[in-house]
Length: 412
Image 1: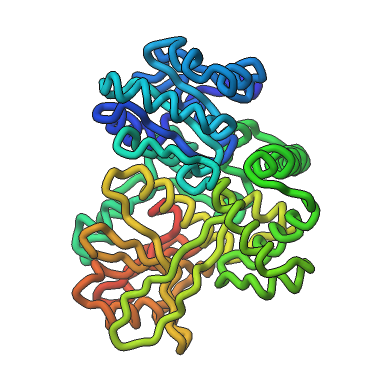
Image 2: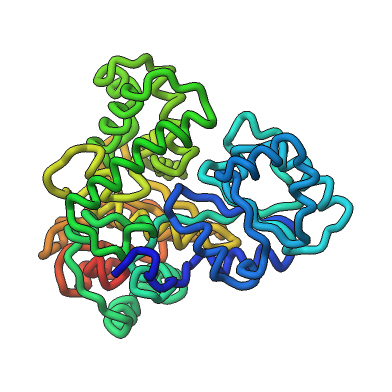
């Protein structure tokens, strides 16, 4: 199928965007390049009727830099793509909004997190809300416009999870194939060969370093940055070790720290913070590191085959898309004690309730695989709604009073 004839798939972020536009004058849609921001805005209501401009266009960017007020006045309802290329444009938008506070007038997109860019002085506080778009979830690829069954786990008692998951939609899949296939919207439906995907991913990396990252920070050693990216992707799912990566790449620890921040700002590297509610155990405080797209992580690391860390990363991608599409946003943590008890992900709701999630690539999970979950449930019996173990097999199992083991594809 030609890439330009692929039908549009609804995105989970659409509902959040519509909610923001109903109350705020400005919505800022952020996410990595090729996650589908422009496509979403061209198809979703009400933004498909807006005038669309992009600062990737040289003439438009020139006007944004020289005459920002004139550009903002070009239409009453505007989508402006890649606004991080002309951050002073935000000042002109602020002036317009302060004169007319009607909701739903502007949508700005960015391939970098505007809130974390040092040279962006105007954040439109009180005038804008931020919406994140991540690579496609598995259910978005299927045209369902949703993420995994995370709401089910929070809304129903753990004793009901097994029946609810068995009654839900079933799309059996091999996680190894899914993890090796990019979820970037441009390529996700193209039926590309392995070589075509590798060429596309390498082009993406080249453009990311030469344009996106170099556009927001001075970058005089791109090859060293690429080595750091490879080191991070080789250590997928591990605690962030800046000193070890500095030694492996020959960079200073201060450079490693600064460049990791740039990779996070551009929605490539994902830090999962530690769950730090300390009761009876000493806890590890460092974040764990993942990537926004598993196929890209595999490509950067040069690994011949996927590992269990890539299945963890698949689960995290879905959790991020789900959590960032909500107005009251859950936070995804990891949990690890100094005695090596750990849980891959702890999903914390704003009201304090938590869902510990362990991920195992095995097809036949047993009680031994639940040690981390059992330790967490014992530590936080009043906060945890139950424990969920996602695995690579086909059966849903009850592995404890509050622990359900489910195939990854039953939840995602």
